[in-house]
Length: 449
Ligand SMILES: *Cc1c(COP(=O)(O)O)cnc(C)c1O
Image 1: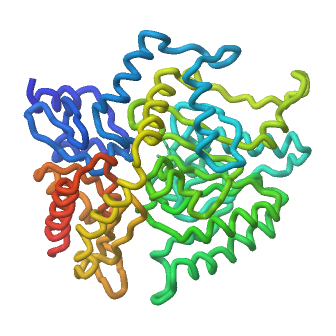
Image 2: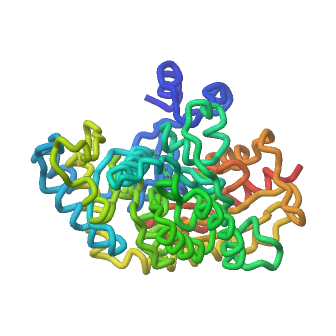
Image 3: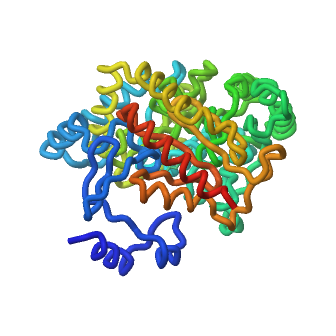
């Protein structure tokens, strides 16, 4: 069967995520037949370079033999067993290894099955910790402007991207929102660190005022990915860690997108020597193979739940597929790749190559910013460079780049007016050159009128 037939069948029955389905009257849905490395191939034999790691999940390429082999072995051994009252080797081994590679205070692992669920777990656990400590007044959360933590109701509530949130606002908890340290908002001449320090003053004031009713501050360390790949200085995390301690408030690090080498270090928190009270992991955890999430926390948090059954202090949260053995095996194979190869060293070279490939665009009349943190690079298209006036979102200029890139065999899926690269770590230099060239052409097309 060819693309056309699959497209017609798809539109006859599927409802796609993050999509106005009417768009597909104009825009084709692309049915993928197979993947190999950084490449996806459709049913007509067209290939697409997966420059966004299939929504930031894929680390070591599609059809990676090491992950595939491990999964095949696991599937014949044990596909699933409930994790209440029962356990299995992949869940135990993965938890041990996650504890070993994450910041030192994190000692306990609670599994879930997707990123949003991990955020829900962290929020509930933090709230319940304080309740178990006799601090039932703590019921609120502090979040950063422009943050994203997923789209289930709790996770959506602590995010701040209007596109996802506005419609559902009547259903949501009300967090306290602190201004973002996003360096794009700095004054001309102000360094990212100076801006982070300045923005932190507002966070400090909120903590001062609300600490008695706040359970936790939740942040995406270093990069607000769904919030247009905005980046901030590690100093902010360092100041935040200290302040949370001073005010008796938890720090939740949502490393769902930035974890596993994306920002240059294994975890983004490391760049601020920050050890959070909760760390949420998903996306790259399984190398992009299966939905799985883990919430890591401290012995102190764990200890506050440990008691006799009758006290109702136990943490009550369950997903049917909690700690699925196949997911855990894919994650173990992924960690084996990190352990056996100098992934971070290679990423450092790839990141440099990525930066060089688009360095000239910093001078483009409609590029307001070229920013990068490790294996994430973003290009911000603007109407007016001097004032950084954004294009009206209704003009959908990013969509023009998307269409052009597809024709040229590259999957770039912009966030509004921001074109970004977040490729699998197995990308080669020539492929980076292609990605950059296609982005350049797309930006040219999208900004010429
Ligand atoms: C993707 C993402 C989530 C949500 O994960 P899902 O698996 O899509 O539910 C949460 N936080 C961050 C920072 C993310 O990028």
